[in-house]
Length: 162
Ligand SMILES: [Ca+2]
Ligand SMILES: [Ca+2]
Ligand SMILES: [Ca+2]
Image 1 (cartoon, rainbow, N blue to C red):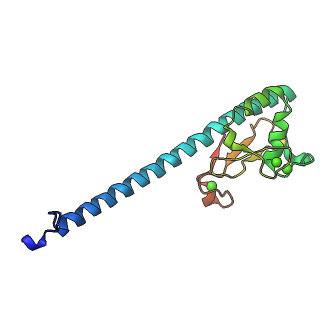
Image 2 (cartoon, protein in one colour):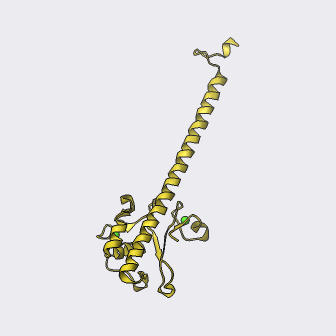
């Protein structure tokens, strides 16, 4: 058996087993860090929606109604969430609330003077509110980890405020 030992005193089998164990441990650590990262982003998305809810409540207190996008966009506003950010920022208490958002989630997507709110996966948030249902609270949502919200399947991991 002497000839099976390498010059370091380990057999080839021992070395192979060690390599495999290290590979398994590394894969485990990688998938653990992936799931920690995913969990952190989910928590971040939920936290931002709570803040936006507060801002929407402040907007309601100020105007006596929620903002309905049916009227179209303001100048320079090109997406629902840019319009909503703009509308909320005009109400002092609502502005105070959205100023609490994580700064990495409030960015200038299209480079103009008005900011957009994105989710932790880099996609703009969605906003929906219909005056026809005045009792309803506006719906704000993130398209979630898959960064898509078109099909029913893609909507499954979406994260909503309500
Ligand atoms: Ca714009
Ligand atoms: Ca913008
Ligand atoms: Ca989705």
